[in-house]
Length: 102
Image (tube, rainbow, N blue to C red):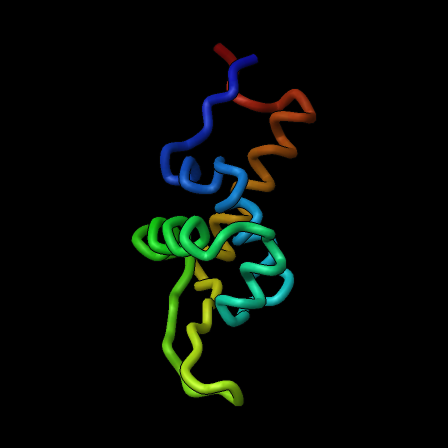
């Protein structure tokens, strides 16, 4: 059995990006700081991965005024939620022996 991940899901097959989407799946809107603490990555690393996820339409970043001033809020998009579910389904099928065969 081969692990033939569909191309549109490859963006999720990276530990930091998968952690970001997993956290946002549980809480679809977080500040950048909250997300950084939840994923335990540096601000620069998180920003880079968020840019990639935003480029693919999985997350959206918005600047808002919060109680502590200007904040970046990160939201999981409907596309991001759907791709995450599709990624999980692919992994479940693979682990159950129903994945793509070579």
